[in-house]
Image (cartoon, rainbow, N blue to C red; front, side):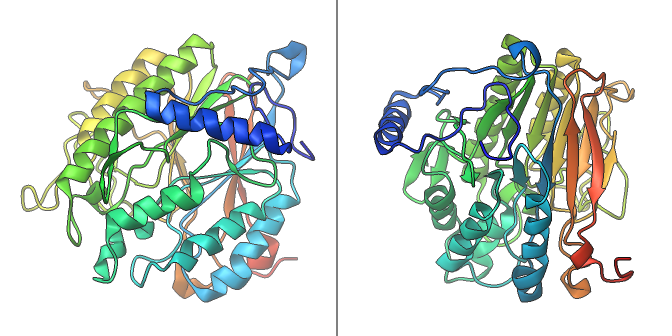
Length: 380
């Protein structure tokens, strides 16, 4: 696996054509039969100390990039080079491949694919609203067609992207919507690294597709039900394999409380109802998911991290409260850096997460300021 540390139950993509064709055939069968993909080629290969995946490792988180030509041609290549210089188990981009305005041509996705595949470590991606829900701000594009295209470009196999792809679990039911009707939510992925379980969720900004241009309540309802099911399934899988922690990655900042000035919304931290002013405008696309997530976090008891982009502001905090107003001690929110295009490459940075299955909190977070992207204060 090159410079990628050996991790429990990560199965690297075979380089033999017949084995890959076998995986593709099994993926098609799983989709037809409503199964979830598993590590079917080689089974589970637990690594780490004593074969139980206890070795510490590091991962990279980034998103909401690039938003400008300068970021695309200089800032993001600098960031990728910085990631490639470090020993990362995998990387995750939490969505938004461009700014909210402007067209969504096919080249947007092919350029992003090339960037992800230039990463030495396995690369995971979850869609952002600027990639599809907001594409219909330009009447030349249909948001569901653009989501279908993302599914084709990034999620046509059960493997990750990047230099050393590995096999993932892929959601096949319940169904989301595409331009032609119901179809599997293949963008929702799950994998294990050591004794930690990870999953991506297609949860979007722009009220989760309930506001902005051409809101789509039917699309939202199908995807929201799928996201809640995938989230619950992830906790079930984590408990079954005795995972010591769970991490979710999605695009939307749903707002967990009434902190102002960063998120697009505020919400009652105990009822999790969004503060709507005037009522029902914009619609609340997150409460049902957050209530379900809170119940699962409390039942799991072990550390849970929720990573998102959307608000373009790096933070690590504990904003989730119980229905009676007590902080959920085992829950941590991580907001990744994101573009502020007017500042050039100033915020084209990433977050390194040290994962130690033997530690009490499991996850430790470290900002990575890319030396070549320093703008206000040059690198020493």
